[in-house]
Length: 120
Image (cartoon, rainbow, N blue to C red; front, side, top):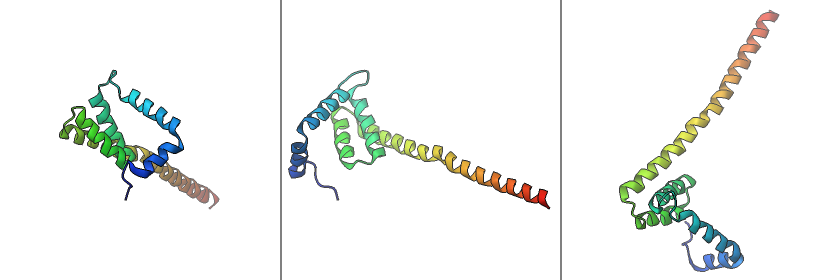
């Protein structure tokens, strides 16, 4: 379904914008360097985010990087479950928007009934 990373497509992408690609790689190296968070933690975060963004290339590369950084299978799966909860939590939290519309429609119907009752 997805072309493999590497090969002619990757070369073409690199050739089309080499300076931008190098800037992106430098940014990535800086982001994943040890800092207040260690590499393992950053890679576990990346695994979770990759699942939320549903990027198959990112899922594969960051799962492998998390293993190389010392994460174990259970830690990676736990990060994925955190991502799943956050995605579901977002849907639940945003349900307030739909419920607000339901509330407005019900209020409008009550107001229309009240006006009709006054006219009668």
